[in-house]
Image 1 (cartoon, rainbow, N blue to C red):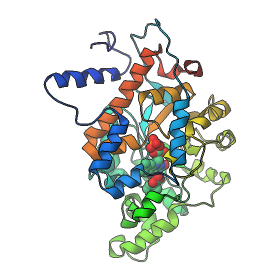
Image 2 (tube, rainbow, N blue to C red):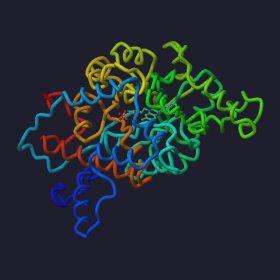
Image 3 (cartoon, protein in one colour):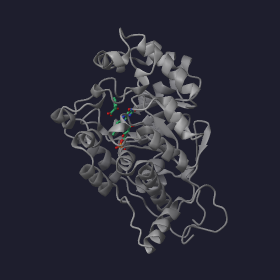
Image 4 (tube, rainbow, N blue to C red):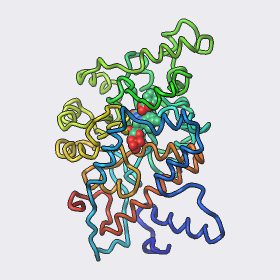
Amino acid sequence: MIGGGSTEPEPGKDWAAFQYEIYLKGMTGAVPRLPADPSRLAEMAAARLGPGPVGYVAGSAGSGSTERANRAALDRYRIVPRMLRDTSRRDLSVELLGTRLAAPLALAPIGVLSIMHPDAEAAAARAAAAQGVPFVLSSASSTPMEQVAEAMGDGERWFQLYWGKDREVTKSFLDRARSSGFTALLVTLDTPLLAWRPRDLDQAYLPFLRGVGTANYFTDPAFQAGLAKPVHEDLDAAVLHFVRMFGDPGKTWEDLAFLREHWDGPIVLKGILHPDDARRAEAAGMDGVVVSNHGGRQVAGSIGAAEALPGVVDAVGDRLAVLFDSGIRTGDDVFKALALGARAVLLGRPYAYGLGLDGQAGVEHVIRCVLGEFELTMALSGHTDAARLTRDALA
Ligand SMILES: Cc1cc2nc3c(=O)[nH]c(=O)nc-3n(C[C@H](O)[C@H](O)[C@H](O)COP(=O)(O)O)c2cc1C
Ligand SMILES: O=C(O)C(=O)c1ccccc1
């Protein structure tokens, strides 16, 4: 492959070869269906998809200050490229939560994906499996977890838990997730309540009030047990029950013992921004944390996620898996997060746009763009091993 490294088998996949695939296809007149630039991808999604769905995905909390802080925090760090270090062989794989990942990336849990594309989570999950990256399925998916698992074959899958008020529903979700082959549990702590989101308020647009994103709940025996009538006989009552039990602002650190007791695989707390909270996660027997502010969708005026990353890594990074999301758009963003000590990153909105514009193929395109650029960023700045990036690589 031209510029893609040696002709001997590479350790892992040759992500960087994607650029030449695009150029070579172009020689036969084929123009890529989707842009490689994440801003253009977002613009194209905004132009093609309806205002409600686009506002929901693109929007964030308050005036958008946290979303801007996420970008500013990543932009503030700069890569200092080093030369003549033999980068002909690159290894993007990382060890994480007891498995080896082909690349330091997973698809973030995004609920209600059917507002983007009718094939929704199944298409996104298939894309992840095809590219060899884990898919994190949201509790609030539009497709029941069993169906998504089936669509993925043996692709690596993690389950994101919205930890609601009903213990029986939580236990049932954990049982179902385990039997469907989900190996790790990500527990999202930053969304016990839905935040103030002006863009959705101004359109009065909230997908789950229309019964979108409730599939795991509506198919759940423990959830159904709390209803007077079957879901299909009284949809409004089912939605109301969902809204009432979905979040629980009353939870405290002590409650984690319940999850530890009912899930024997790795548990990762998503939404950690303070080093002391990371230490508490460790004390509670957790296996990892995701440094994240939910893509700026929860607390407006919050610290940019990348500002919080070094402190959390210093606190627990040698004992817990530290993952990162919020603002990752490009390969150099992935590089910076890893150099700051994250073991891997979660990709959010960009894959939702890829899905909305071109289904499974669109998601695969987005994954390949980010990882292609990441591999080139590593090589061009003098690094060969994704697992060994350190802060020295940054100014
Ligand atoms: C439309 C949308 C829905 C989301 N739904 C969930 C969810 O169900 N569970 C969850 O833990 N995080 C959810 N998130 C947050 C993402 O997992 C992730 O933290 C965030 O998108 C990362 O920021 P980024 O989009 O700027 O990359 C959602 C984000 C978006 C944009
Ligand atoms: O919109 C979100 O950010 C989110 O996390 C969510 C919450 C409930 C249902 C679907 C998505």
